Image (cartoon, rainbow, N blue to C red; front, side):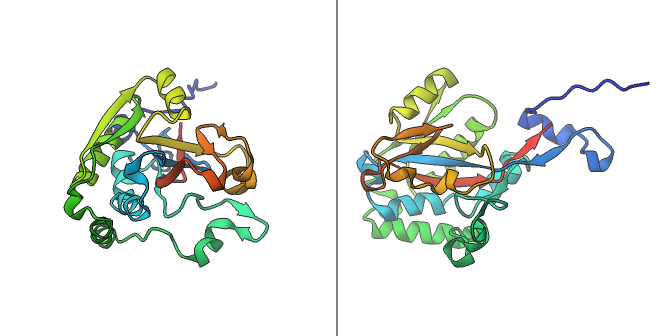
Length: 236
C-alpha cells in the first residue's frame, strides 16, 4: 500500500500559516537552500550617488520583519550578501567576512536612528529634497507585499517610493537593461562556492547577468546591492 503524494515546490505565502509542518506531524517541509534576496540600486541615477544615502536606505529595512512576517519564516534575515553555510579556502565565508562581525546589526531601532542621521548628513534631513524613487518588481508571490513594506519603511525616512509592478517577462529584460531606480533581485547558488558572489569576474571587461545577479566591472560600477533577507528556505 502506497500513499500518493504530490510535490509542490512553491507554496503561496498567505497559505503557509494554515499548513502543518513535518515536525508537527504534517506534510509541509521547509528546507534550507543557499541564496540571497536583495535589492539593486541604479548608480547611474543621481539619487544613489551618495554612499550615505545608500547605507541609510539599507539600514531602514527591518530584515527580521520581512523574513518572518512578510515571508512567513521561509527566509532568514541577512546581515551581509553572502549567507551562512557558504565556504571558501578559509572555511565558512560568513564567519570570516568583515572580521566576523555582521554588516547590519540586528537592533532595528538603532539601525533606523543611524539611517536618519546618515540621510541628514547627506543633505536630506527627514528626506527633504530627496527625489521620488521607483521600485520595480515582478507581480508574483510576496514581491509586491515586500515592495509595499519598503514604501512604508523608506517613508519613515521622509522618502517617497512608488511601485512599478511588472510581469516577469517584462521585468527581467528591464532590470538587465538598467531601466529602474531600485529593483528586487536575488541569487540562488548553483553550487557551494562564495566566488559566485565575490568573483573577480567583476573585473572583467564585459558585464553579464548571472541568474539575475548583475556582475560588472568594479571600476565602472553601475549598480549596488543591498541585502534584504538571506538563506532562503525552499518550501515543499
